[in-house]
Image 1 (tube, helix red, strand yellow):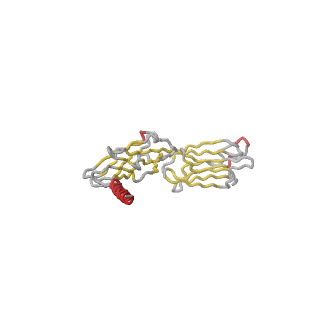
Image 2: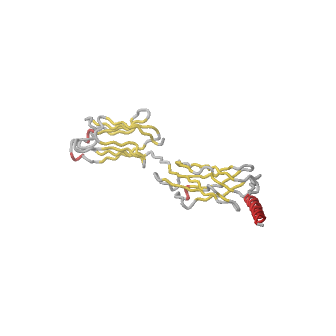
Image 3: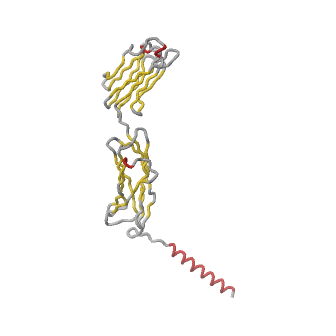
Length: 255
């Protein structure tokens, strides 16, 4: 009797295993199955020029259709970029394809120099479907365009020895200050005096040449003078102390 009971139990177990296997069988339907959409590239670093730029993000979907399809996307609440600085399009999948794109237009409206922004573009799951790898991050910043440079000179006691010139790519002097301009000469009163020069330079390559008549730079043995050439947040050149007769620094305006 025990043998029959064991045989019946074993048969029931086998039937149960077959039934369990049948329940786990999944048939993939690439036409009528559930739609799943994702970004296939999810990270971008963009510098936005004055005229704006476009970021094209590739997307893919798990089903195919004889008609083109569109899917919505929105800006995630964690984005730091102002809404006026971007426009999110729709993800478009051409007919007969699993792959498509979504365009995001970026502009410099409300962007500040030197500030980094982020836009998190999030796919919206289609009705009855799902979205995975659904967030693409665009880190972006404004390209700084600056032509109005500022040369700041801080003198030592021998201010009259300091001079400078800026030459363009052709070697032509486009701005300069000759020796003897700063002062008073050979005086402790000149230590720490600040002179600011505003210079407009067209786009191109230049050279800043700082010079000292006595060839000891901006150092009088007690105090060290300095100079710096800036344009907005861009630091083109700087120096301090005993740089000898000449300090030459090449720089470029809006490369």
